[in-house]
Amino acid sequence: MSRTRHLAHALVIGSGIAGASCALNIADQGFEVILLTTGPRLDDGNTVYAQGGIVYTGQEDSPALLMRDIKKAGCYHSYDKAVRYLATKGAGAVERVLMDRIGVRFATQGMDKDEEYDLTREGGHSIHRVLHCADYTGRAIMERLILAVEAHPNIRVLSRRTAVDLITSQHHARSLTNRYQRLNQCLGAYVFNESAQHMETVLAEFTVLATGGMGRIFLHSTNARCARGSGLTMAHRAGARLMNVEYVQFHPTALYHKSRRRFLITEAMRGEGALLRNGSGERFVLRYDPRGELAPRDVVSRAIVDEMHRSGDPCVFLDCSEMTCDLTQRFPTIHKKCLELGLDITRDQIPVVPAAHYQCGGVVCDSYGRTDINGLYAVGECSCTGLHGANRLASTSLLEGVLWGESAGVHIAKQLSHRRAAIRRLLDDIADWSEPAIPEEPDPALLAQDWGVIQSTMWNYVGITRTRQRLKRAVEELRSLYGNLTEFYKRTPLSKPLVDIFHSSYAAYIVANSALRNPESKGCHYME
Image (cartoon, rainbow, N blue to C red; front, side, top):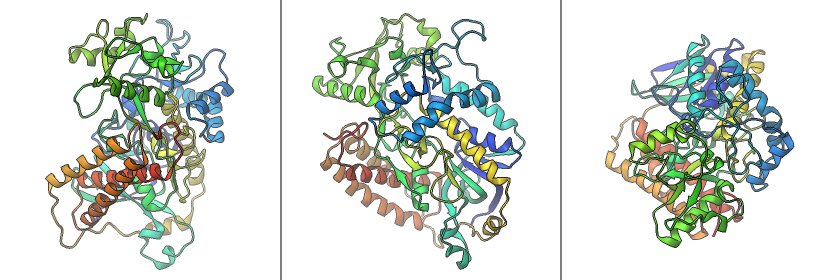
């Protein structure tokens, strides 16, 4: 049984840029927020790994120009309303939340902080419009967000917590009257406390999914350990609508090295003049696209894979020799990491390969982050605002996170100002989590084998290039695995590894099945 019950006005599941921005905006209006993070600290997710930067406004820029770049990168599969919202409101959110509220200091063109911002350019952008903090933009943002969140009296951080299932009135109310209601109301989540090894019930009038992506369901990924598709799984099980989940973006340049997480080599290096070369030293990308290294990520990733197939080489190389900036100052994180591996980027080429990087689709939401379940919001990478379409434009992810995080927080705070007695009665009607009567202990060897099946299947069959035969094989294998894990899940006491693999198998099946059902080759969903 669940041993602990928590209650707050709002529950935010995930502590990256989207979740933390949302929590701050709710708390600033005087409401109590519980913020969940899976790790010991708030920087457990993908935000800290964002190197390149965040879209702002360049010289001679305009919302129309940014909209054109976003839609072109997204293969004209984006939702115009969402694109317009980000293009017109995004820069303001950067100023309000990141610059004014938490004091992030982005790089300027000189030593004086009052000088003009040093804007860079990345793939798919027609001009320089990307703010950055050298090559550790995500970490710089998270450091300031963490300070603001931890100092806030209205935010209670619950660390080492993994949300297992969303609590909804139609699934978890004890009263038949409440379960018969036409509208399904989200009322919080059942949460596993990793430190205490028991389940907790976290109840809230509003719940925000900010769980990040799902890159770790692939064999090679740039993502953090927690990026396992838990937001997709929980939302789908609760009955929320998903869209565009087959569009998984692979970053073209991850460091080629044997490690559990592929170290990202930011696209900003190519924006500053780095060139891709094959093993023969040829600058090959121009054969695939006239934009060369600054073509959209799906184009560059496929070019690299095709080149590797042609040559039989395990990687290609990023050549920094023609870059004019001081590499040690502009890209200190990359310089340090490569030095640890015996590479000096000031004279050596960097071996790179594509890796699963970003989830372009997710839980469908509007400009306020509202899903089609009452009281449930989704922000950041786990959501589908429609902004990215079939392929994300570089450096729009952090902007989407902060803009929709702010928007959802402001909207939730307005709703909370009109308290609803009916919701409070529903909260009192929720039962705690029930454990199996005769638990069966999990076998670690079986869990490890199942992980291998998920990641290898997704990488080999649902990867950068796809065919119907591969996708059919993936769906069959993942359906069987998910069925076995579901039965095992019902009779086994919960643990963090078990929750992770259940969420991952479910998310993998959803992605593979969505890819199989989409016959149109577009963007990140590339059908041979």
